[in-house]
Image (cartoon, rainbow, N blue to C red; front, side, top):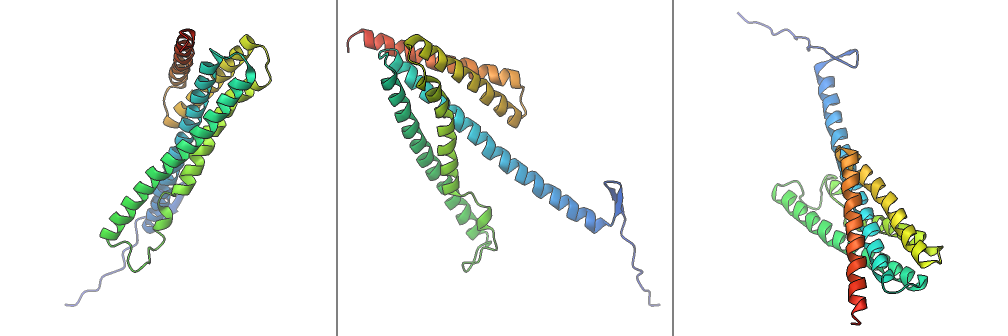
Length: 220
């Protein structure tokens, strides 16, 4: 006897207080997974930007404190900071470009081996890969933003001791801010992260100042 299969109704599921068919729920889950992936990608970019800004802040401030240990004039100190900003931003940009481009080449080669790219048609996959130029520009900009802080703190102060104090104070506030922001992005305790970044920054500036002062006093 010939039997006919009845169309069984899809099991509905409740999503956001609404009853949806099973297929619609799968579509929503796929969209949620994609949004989580996009959020994770944005979080990585933001964390890299914070680290770049913190690097620019601390390296430029340490350079200025080091030269300030042996040269009290404001012009030399500020020029040293500007040189550190330019050199550091260029170094960060070039390093990030080379690193991301290497990752880009590896991922393209992997997709070609897996057959995702053939005949010059990548189906839009290439757009999802990291952009080396964007990464280089973002890294350089983040470094420059951090490096501007000690430069602005020293630019309008003529007295030598007050200038050093202004640089340390401005950098300390920025270090706490960057440490707190990095902890929020990484979902870590903000107070501990900010304290570690602050103490590390003080050590870097103090060691640079002290060693430069010591070497300068020897007459080398």
